[in-house]
Amino acid sequence: MRRMTVYLQVMLAGILGLVLPLAVLGYLGEEREFHNSRIYEAHIWQRRTGGAPVLPNDVPTAIAFKKLRLSDRLPRINTVIDGSSTMLTVRNEMFPEDIKLYNYATWAKSLNTTIPEVEYLIGEYRNIAYVVIGIDWFPGYLGTPLRGTPNFLRDVGPGISLEAEFEEALSLPRVRMAPAFVASLWHDFLDPRHPPKPDSVPSASGPDAGTYFCPDGSLAKDFRDDAVHSCVGFRADGSHVALGLQASTEDRARKIVEDYMAKFPGRQFPDGVFDGLIEHGGALNPDVMTRLKDIAIVLSLRGGHLYLVFPPVIPGLVQRLLDHPVAGPAVRHYLDGFAQFGRDNQVSVLFASKSEDYGCTGSDFLDTHHANERCYSKIFNVWRSDRAWP
Image 1: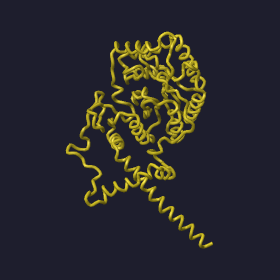
Image 2: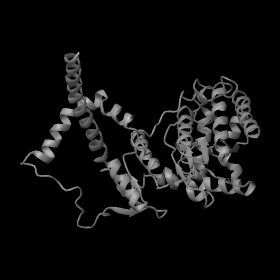
Image 3: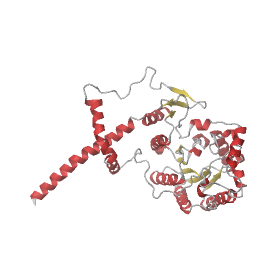
Image 4: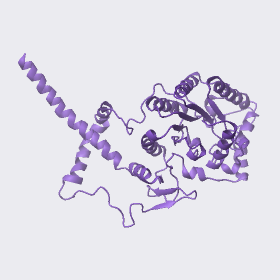
């Protein structure tokens, strides 16, 4: 019996001797890889200055940066905006002073991602009382929500469990990176030919060298080599600087509308338009509506509220679609369904897609469905005058 006990102890020690170093190397490798990135540098700079860092303009970078910022801001906010790029120009200053929000919208994000994210946030953070979700019916981001409410902040958020850290550190990609990480440690810290480098070396002009001001007064700094004072970055509230400042002309706006409708002559609409909205006659997705209702109930119980916003579309286009013999009935049925849902469940539904009803003009749009902050300011000013917020 004693031999068996000793044998098991030796085996356990051997396993731990193999697993623990891999776990430590995996964890340190992850931390080193992440914290040395420009994304993390931009995160720290924004936390310190409140400015708008300019990073590579791609979806993975935007998501990684916004995860860091949301995780950092969560203890100090009471409102989250979620949706696709059509919501990126919504700013905190458009709301009452007691609303402290973070705009977590990013490009090409559909309801199948937005709803689980919101479910997780309101489940884990009771200080989140108000949620604004963009309903992107026009670009077609209306997919069925993913099952479950995964912790999408697990790799950056506060309160990460030891179990989650251990699982990530022992993942196959991290284990495979261990030899390279050991080599990098030797190169940077142990090899006498390469003495340790200081954590940071301020430039001769100081730590804020390279900063500049955008046309709206936002402080910005480029964290990418090919960006020269472009202002293509996110403010501290998550809104996008450059998208918010875009401007067009009325002539170009009219051409955008005509070119769009010219794609759909007569009664024909190509497959995929509005993500099956026309195919299903504008019927609402039961799973989407049930989960939105549950979100509204949770927020209501804590004294909060759910707001569903149909983002603005370039003036004249929605009316053309409503008048279309095929698209019209489906779009009307879809919008009427959401309006009824709002009345039945004490959910505020803001149909801003007919942007002309709120005073927006063609010059406020980059394309068919991306409005600048001037348009959104008009929309929220009208809405707030009609009803109390929250």
